[in-house]
Length: 119
Image (cartoon, rainbow, N blue to C red; front, side):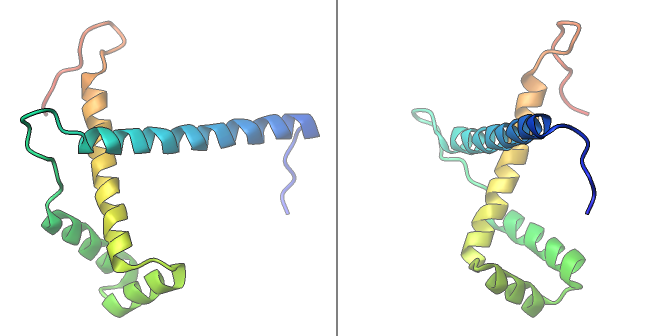
């Protein structure tokens, strides 16, 4: 077991800071997903194409399970997750990535100028 330097109080403070960081990240994630789901009056509901979700999952099955669909499904079963729950998680991951990218684009650069859009 590896020793972590610091007094017990320092370790408690570091653990507390890590816990707060994780909680803040989870809250930010949920707020971003909710913001995506909220539609303005007259606006069409936003949704991720199911083909995009299927493509992400297919890529994960290819890379992590060597194209073994049954191994992938067995892994979900071991985790107590249904395929539908996993698809929802993948959808939320896509939404979070998209919303995070949108927020980064909207943030001004350090010199006070807006960041350029596009490639």
